[in-house]
Image (tube, rainbow, N blue to C red; front, side, top):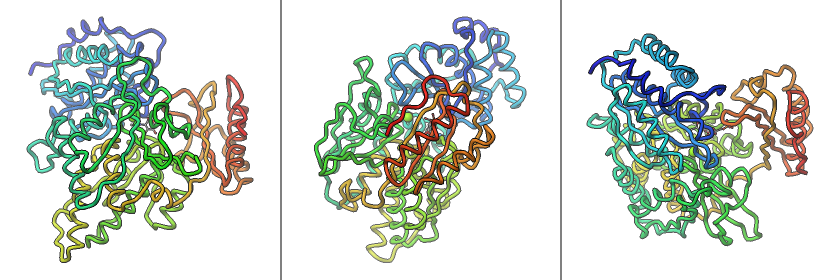
Length: 549
Ligand code: 16G
Ligand code: MG
């Protein structure tokens, strides 16, 4: 292939000018903001994807156009590394630099610098696969992305409308095809077949349980879940798809979806499930899931990511033991948002090692790879279970002596295919939870019995500059503004089971305050006091946090 044609890039870039006065940042999950401000960003991310593919010996890079649970007017873009992981952190800075280069000349300068710093062979081929969710702004952004890719002469595969985890799956499959690490058939059909077959094996011989109503946030999860359910077959899984209107403008994530349900702790619009019925919500790009039901007394009961982690960990530990592969050790990874009761249950009742890391999938995923089987979930419902190559080897080569052992091994092996190894995947996680409930013949209430969440509260505080907040200890302790943490600690000390921490959001221009305590009243009071403290001492703007007592 010829070297990069910089004149061609300059010419293409004139059609995607960067707006003045906007500072873009590649944040926790890529660029995410109002869709009408993203054209130039998407064009440049295309260029970066191609450069990274060249750098990685022409491996396929993935590009996903989505803004997940954000309002419909927003969109976003993120890069996926060849084996389905999030973009390597050191390249996030390049993404930010490209997005912020104001002129075509500046843009070319940054590209040349990336080429030199990474010793990129310009003549290598570039391969990029991309997909988008159902947002109305998607098609135009994809055209800008293609312009960027073509300007560097990249080969492209348009994977069409997909969930974020499907794009991760596809990227990994393309790069492992024909190797001993082959992750599966690189197609949407391959994805459904792999999951459906694994689910059948995981629930083999156990009776079907009641229907699951799934709120798909009026997003891409709706058509994809319907397709998946068709492959699984309603003889073993009955799924009722709700909030599947991806056409009517304004409905995506509106008063529905996993983020809404978790934040507001209530049923989504369009899902009036009766007492005892089982519900779940996906987010706008189907990488998060939470479960829920309405108890006999009418209370809404949420089973969030923490509950999924505890369920998955206990099931996997039991299987490992019964299968006789005890050498395989299970660990759980959480963030500071994990409910204190969940952490306590895992550590002190289940006696599983638990690590706490900073918010964001890349941090959890990385930590989970340190265990033989690493279960990672954020409380918001994003997570998965990772099997290390050694654990996979042990599980696949284990010999069994009894029928019981054989049965456990069969189910454990099925889980290694059922659970998306590239990233948290709402559809795969849904099947994982369903498989466990089927095996145990449990209701959601049975599952909920393990432990009772401490009341918690999340508050957003608007401040003049959230970047002055610097944390440490997996975001649980503030080191700046100096002295604020001591004041927070003094407040926390007054409440039974009190815990509170403050961190700047990576996706919104706000500071988040989390609090939990033994009772709802105490928790709300603590959240209110800490929010007020942040507002008063660290440049609060707008209104002082409302009192929600
Ligand atoms: C992003 C992260 C999610 C995290 C959330 C926190 C990924 C793929 N997604 O959505 O894991 O929980 O940001 O948002 O990493 P915050 O920084 O605004 O609190
Ligand atoms: Mg999402």
